[in-house]
Image (cartoon, rainbow over all chains, first blue to last red; front, side, top):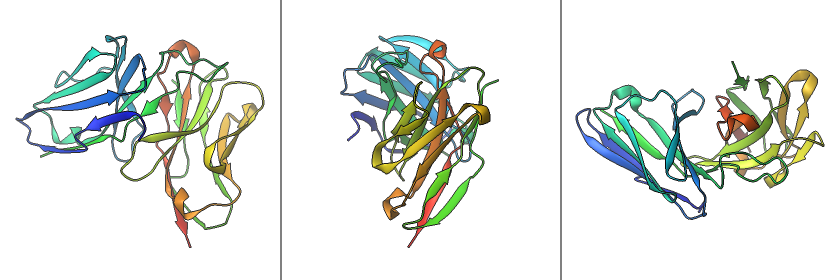
Length: 119
Length: 114
């Protein structure tokens, strides 16, 4: 158990559906992230939240809508997705947003991912 | 633009053999460097990290990596591979002023044959 829990682990949805991915961390971290992992491509950072406030939106299409109600929970709401959005969506967290070279603190901890298939 | 290159998409080694996974980066001044491992159906687990100082870094599971500034490389090594090391390995690069916005390589899939 990594301390970052993602549900569901697998999701199949049609292009007109609305669904949500959930991420929960039990590590006392203050920053949370959504990454997209597509086959044969590097991980792409989508969103960053720090103390519930969005600090980064990496030009993500509006059909992906994040929500961070508190520092422990992060959602990714999905609607009218395209087949090319099929991917593994990884949630991560860190104590803070800035890596501390002296202590190695604030390094990312990842969840196991939610495998999304859009038909 | 910053980039991370992992030249080998797949590598196959025999159990007990040594391993080296390559990582090159283009990131200006000395960045922070990481190696993560992803087992099938799992998220990414941090193997090791480099910020400064000794260029040879020890990590978990018997892995080590060496930072070579002149070659802009941060190659991952293990002297004797175990079958349980079969996974996908990602090199990642960051900088303090970019916070935790790491740039990841495309990954190298390691297969271990018995």
